[in-house]
Structure formats: C-alpha cells, structure tokens
Image 1 (tube, rainbow, N blue to C red):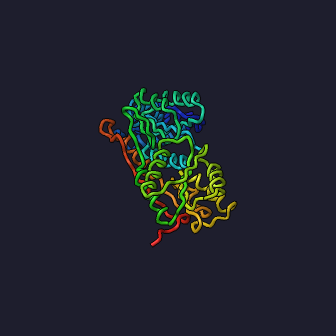
Image 2 (tube, rainbow, N blue to C red; image 1 turned 90 degrees about the vertical axis):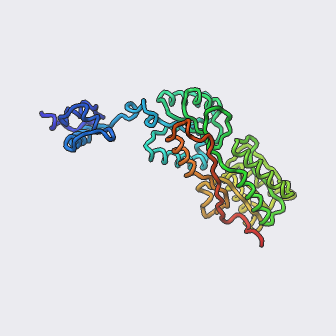
Image 3 (cartoon, rainbow, N blue to C red; image 1 turned 120 degrees about the vertical axis):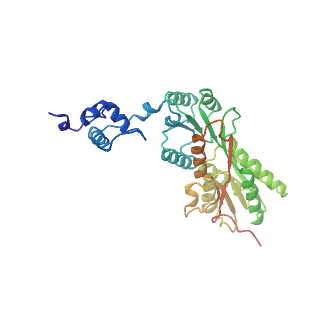
Length: 341
C-alpha cells in the first residue's frame, strides 16, 4: 500500500507523518504552518491535504513558549456565577481569542488552597500575563504572579503592588451624577443598599455616592447585608420598605441587588415605579435590560475594558501605562423619575 492510499488517521498525527504522506521534507511542513515562511504553492497544497487527512494540528503551545505573544494569558476570577463577571469574562475571552491569544480561566472560588493549586498549574504553562478581575481573589495570589515575573493587569482592584497595571472605572463622576439624579427626581429619603464586606470597587461607589449626597445636604440611609446577591436585594427591600420612614429613592450597589429589590417592592409592597419609588443600579448586566426590570443603571465599559487589556498585552511592559481609567455610561430606563423642570 502506498503512503497516499493509507486510511484516514483517527488520532492527531505528527509533523513527520504529514511529511511522509505529502512526500515532502519535515522542514517543508514547518514552513507551511509558519506565517511568512517561504514555501511553494504546490508544496503548501500537498502539506495541507495530508494534514487534513491525518487530522494534524500544530502544537502552538510547544512552538511558542519562547515567544511572549504565543504564551497563554491567565484570568483569575472568583465569582463566575454572578452576571457581571460572566459578561466581563465573555468580552475578555472573545477579544483575546480574536487577537489569537490562548486564555486560561482560573476559578478561584472560596478555598484559598484550591485557588493556589489552580494557579500553580497555570504557571506550569508559562503564562505571559495574568488578569485579575474585581472581586475577592486573594492578594497573595496576585503577588505570586508578580513574583513569577508575569505581566499583571488588575481590573477594578486596589492592590498596591509594584509593577502591576490597573484598569479602573471613573466612579467619582458617575456617583456625583447619581446623587444629582435622585435630587432632581424629587426624592426626599434616599437609601444606599450594599454589603458589609466590600471590595475596592464597591467601596469606591459607596464613598463617592455618600459624599455627593452630603454635599447636597442629604444624609442617606445605609443598608448593608452579607452579599451583593439577588436575595440580598430582596432582604434589603423587605427591611427598608417596612420601616417607619421608607425610602423613595434607592441606589443599589449593583444590578443584581437592584433586581431583587425591584421584585419585592412591586410584588410584596405594591410600589409603583418610578412614581412612588426610584431605583438605580450599577453594572448594566443583561438582566437589567429585560422587560420585567428595565432598570436605570450605570453600565460597566465591558468592551473598553477588554480592548484595554488587549492593548496592554501588545505593548512592551516598560512603555505601557500603569493605570487606564474608563467612564461608566448611564443607561436611562424606567426605574428613575425624570428630572423635574
């Protein structure tokens, strides 16, 4: 049986096997799959035909370990079940894959030991960079990446470590705008709904929002629960709306809490929005735009964050900016009263 009559292989073949079937040298196979390398059209056609028949794929990881741009990029995230992180992760992975970067996602979870083991496994692949999303990946994991010589990009984090790069949101302007919206809507009793254990991004929103209201002579009610979940928003609504002086304006620190708050306000307390109650969120998760919510919120710049990460990965580290600041865009929907003339 000649080499051209061999049956189709059921396993990935080696480059040597492709060369044998195509009747060319091993180096011709390598040149065929190397961008910009010189190879004749006839030879390329033979190699590609043999590669398809043998189910051959180039091992880019093995070929590119010596090249920074060919090595994987790690993403550390601790709350994949939450809509904000799921959407942000979708945008980041889509953008990086379009840029032909391999992405390794490490789900940190609640167990520090498990997270450390996952990170150690990822480092064995000689990742070129690690992206740490906002949330609670421990600072010691971030430090491990820095110590390993990786490029480290922090998204909405406040870790004060040398050599890291930051992508942060301009929360101050957004929160000043939020305070003004409530005042113009005629709200007299304004509540902030958050959680006790705050991340740097949540803390920044709280601080700037409270400060902006106080500048206007308003002392907000502050409710803090155990989590920023949908159920946390429900609990906040039940406690605040049953109080002696229930709020007529509520800023929920994120959209997930706002959705829970809205459902209880409407279904259990019969509140009409926005006539009797104005509710504002933050993040612009997918659910915020659903017909049942139509939540007015500030949108995280998901696409811009992803593009900023891709840009930092392309630049030499000593030339890249240390901090990139992005604006949060207001998405006006149906849960805030329009400003009074």
